[in-house]
Image (cartoon, rainbow, N blue to C red; front, side, top):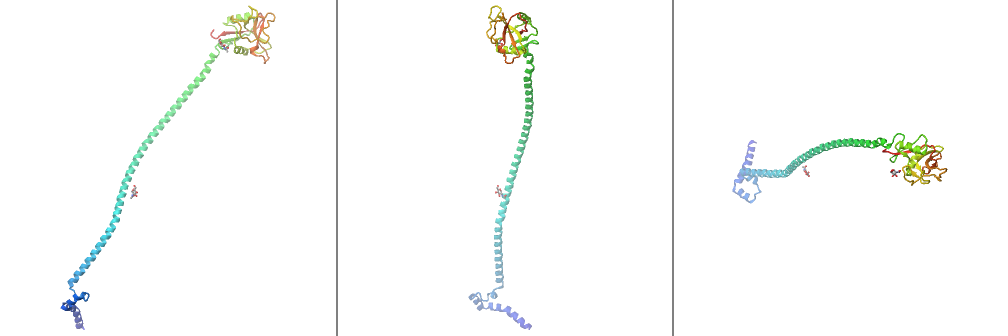
Length: 291
Ligand SMILES: *[C@@H]1O[C@H](CO)[C@@H](O)[C@H](O)[C@H]1NC(C)=O
Ligand SMILES: *[C@@H]1O[C@H](CO)[C@@H](O)[C@H](O)[C@H]1NC(C)=O
């Protein structure tokens, strides 16, 4: 059995060699290359073919991997560009941040300036308020002062004398004749009242108390020439305030007097009467403020 096996093996090994070594077979190889080539070729040739194939496969793999790597290269470069962009953006952002920081510090400076301005304005406001209050107080003093100071100037007349339009007026408590009344007035630096205007007449009228027939001498008479009335200073009577029907010279009445009764309808501008000059009546003196 062993020999058979050996013989078979040797046969198997030897056969191709034998076959291929024969010129016929070699010839047939040229004729039909697909016939029994695997077994008919030189073992070196097979090895080289295998190596070449291997090399080809390796090359193909290399090419494929290189292609792959080149394929992968573009995304990586994209990432790189992304990275570059990112870094660019980072620098942009840092620049922006620095700008913002600069702006912030500027704004802070402005804020402190504004705060200073506010405090300054507050101080100014306080100062102004003080100033206004001071001015107001001065103004108040100025407005209240004339109310206190004119008091002496409002009545520049002696006690019991009343002031009107630069003159002082006095109503006597006693009664005298017209000429004695005038003498009394002269002794006090004045004269019996000379009444030139309705205002003056009304002022004097308001000084007089009401009564049944309250009568007061004033500075008019027609003693020298009947019906020619003159004031005590010698001037002629122009404007008069006689009661209706007066003067009537009833029994030689040459001196003028004013009457103020209880009758409220009677008015100041119709209050003059004439009476005998020797009658005893109270009187009204007038003198200038300066005298
Ligand atoms: C970089 O900034 C630009 C605009 O300045 C923006 O369009 C882009 O998306 C940013 N890139 C990255 C990677 O953030
Ligand atoms: C005031 O006095 C002046 C001068 O004596 C006189 O001219 C004037 O008419 C008087 N005014 C009144 C209202 O009596």
